[in-house]
Image (tube, rainbow, N blue to C red):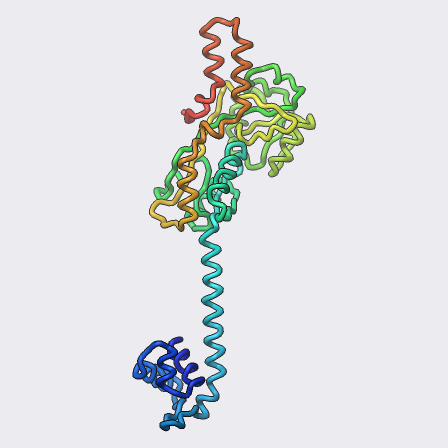
Length: 335
């Protein structure tokens, strides 16, 4: 049976007049009559007895009337619930973010986006590369901010947003404070605190061993804030992407010899249609001047200090030092 048949029958129950019922349903009398007759055939009996001015419900009609009213009520409730859900869902954007993508550049953009589109509700979902790839392809997140995902999956599209270097984070009274950069070999003998989900952990360990020393790892945690607060408390030093550094009781210097860099990209699924809210976010991400508007201010100060300290050095050395720390170098991809 169709909902319109039930609706026509219930209106007829109220009016007991086919013409008035057809008028209320905004259909012709023959159309309403055919709909009621189809319903009668499906239920296996006559529902309405038509006797000129004595039109009335049959026993079967009186029996099924409350049941059909309940069916129509449930149908209306279902449609209303679906409408509420789709309306809310249309404003919801699920943004996947790699755990190591820090708030330093992302937070100003999110504030800008919120001001431009206050109707959008943003849900951030954290994960490593494998998890984000799975969530993207499965539709559990709409888009993601991450390093390159799915090298063998042609459905993922990457648009580079900004580059960042790996830095060494240390307490404010640490000896590294006097240096403009920290060589990897300088970590020999240092107490090292690591993030459990550090993507460069294997590379870090192998690189240290190539320099003939074993890193002294004293603490690991899934929580980034704990790692950095432990560093601030003097428990050791840590290595992380520069924009992950929260700057609370700690300082940072770029890691060199070797220097590690990476690109953070907007990752989308090719060919997937998006609702307006997701399209607004994607356009906002693409239009945002990540390398200029969100440049970490500490780098400007660091470059200025480098210039002052090296002002008496040979010109070639000054150029090399400034080039090492200048923000433009942060955007170069890893070779």
